[in-house]
Image (tube, rainbow, N blue to C red; front, side):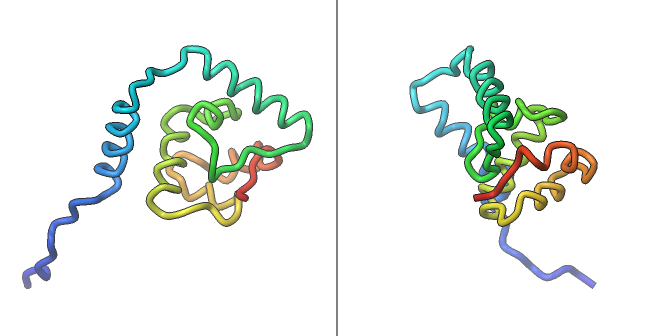
Length: 114
């Protein structure tokens, strides 16, 4: 039995990411070499004040500043919210590949979804 004919999926996750990268490259601004340092400092300061990092607005650098979150997972979080919509609850982040429930529990107090 042949599978049903479907039109090609021209706008998948990969093309959405490429589009976002292309648009950011066209902005004329290069990456700030000190942005990572400032992001880590902001996350640490917010954690000390009892504030949280909003999964729906956080930048890659801010997500990377969280313990156990590297560039790949940070980019997956952003890709997920851009394709699937905003997180309703912070614990939804465990559906991201590479983000375990154990990792979530370790940093849960630092995350929110506003």
